[in-house]
Image (cartoon, rainbow, N blue to C red; front, side, top):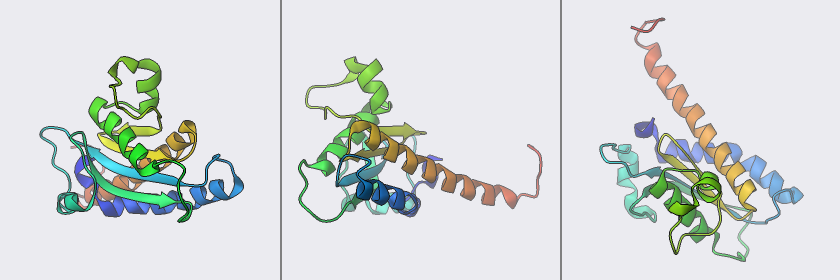
Length: 173
């Protein structure tokens, strides 16, 4: 799954969930007016990201624990109350470093939180793919992150299915 992740898949997933996010902002459901979401790959020895990701490394902020694939701002161009982009990247950093969703990290594995870590949660990880959002209450940040990561996996499964359809087999070999 890891090698299929690129900026196109990440941005398509962000495009898919954008209407839900915009609607939630417009209706006041999320309790915030702005949101910043970052999609990244956890740095894992032996796993190589898609060549598209490697070519774009210089375009994004990256860390020792994750590689940014895409990022998106929602909710207009007004002034932010807090640095939501920094907070989202901080959440991605914690998740990349620990391999845990930040909800689990905060409520079940808090001994892994380091001084200087962002105090909020709202990032998720699945098969070493990290999505972190910031701008709403942590539970809504996590909701958006989960929507994005599940959309990505749906598109990745489509690609895998297309690859497997070409082999002519209907049963496991």
